[in-house]
Image (cartoon, rainbow, N blue to C red):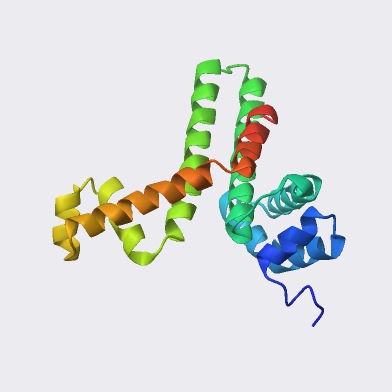
Length: 193
């Protein structure tokens, strides 16, 4: 086992930011199979899936000095899913142009839908790593639309405790959604269409 295999993802990202190609290689070896499976699951095409994973890793290397990643696995999986959706939109555009029936409103709507899905998946990834009770309170509030008293009653906790969990969840979301790498992905999506 080399020293890179023993490092955590956080340590590898720190090394990668410094241009360490061995750290990059270790990240690649840890995640390429999982990312290929995700890309294939969404694209149903092995060649496209391989190209997408390659593009994601090239992008990771090219933006290595800008990266602030808390969860490498979630970041890379989200980048692959976004790339699959971009590929889908590109292919759909090509088909529309071939048929000469491209409707700009429809294409714009599809892009908004993809952006919305990407953002929702990113939020879901953040919520999934919250502490259990915090996550449950957030989901009851946002997904089921329950009020603080209803959440407290359902979970058998004090209203103040439920409120504290919800406040913590919202603070974590606000902090994580303010990360520069999220905006890099959004800008990349916007300009690389």
